[in-house]
Image (cartoon, rainbow, N blue to C red):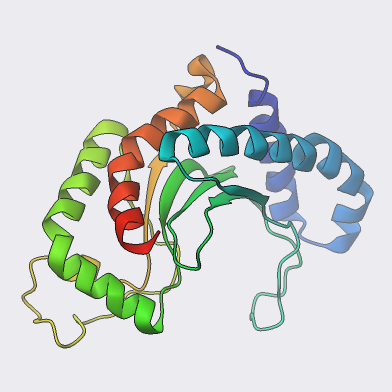
Length: 220
């Protein structure tokens, strides 16, 4: 069922494909008003609509965010000025609470959840969580993979090459233990056009909910 957001995805894909080929201020500035009206504003509406859905499903209020198109290039070797994707996020209060995220570009269309950029005590807490509940977490990830093709995302810091001490290198969940962030993302596939974008996203929220609940129980 069409919900009006297919145009957003189609327009943003066309726009970001052009921007990727011409990532300069000279290309973007004459098209800035089109970006704001045709992509940024509808994306804000989508983020607001889904914030209500996610809050009802999780029982937690979330704050929607549409990420800026402008890149922070201060500490990056890549000095291209603009992001070439549309990213949204819904976060609950708390520095380590698991968030929901949506990503759209000419190369992907995904909905995900996870805890990002863990460090210090939060990272030690994550490792203890994996040690204690790794079986349940792995089972929830596997169920989401079967249901909607979800997979552990490579978003976030690079994983360690070895299992950190005091855990052994033969830990049954070594891959999860090496991570400094854990995000699970599910592709929407082409079927979203039949259901509508919002129902397709909500279906992925439902499928990823067991993973979110485990993370929220520890970090929420």
